[in-house]
Image (cartoon, rainbow, N blue to C red; front, side, top):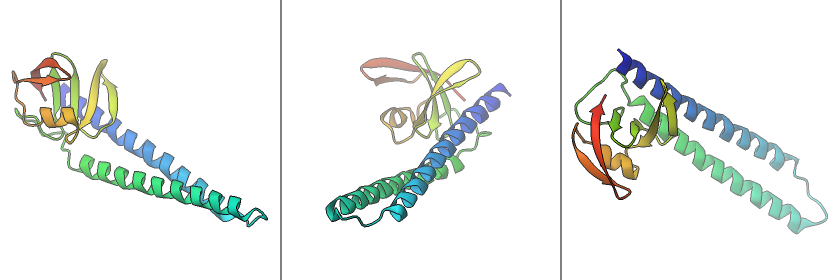
Length: 152
């Protein structure tokens, strides 16, 4: 039962990570929209156009971030925290002799039940290596030999 609680906790932290990023990007978009609307034509026309162009670039960047957040939400929707397997797959917790991983989205270091886990995407370099691994499989990452101890 602890294994399910661990996956659920890591999943919850990943969802929180995505929601926090979404909130931040929405605030940036709102702020930029307000700035665009309040931007008035001044006697220095070039300065005005430069300011608007910079705001447009920021809006495009925020839109790209929104698209990335949408993809992360789609990936999280595919994870079944109740599913367990002997082969590492999306949603697996992989314990190695060097570090602990949660194959999900790239959310960085998470802490659950007093241990650190790295939430990694299956398309990241380490995620690609871990995908399909079984207990006792060995792999090379960052010039260090690693061994899979447990898959939850």
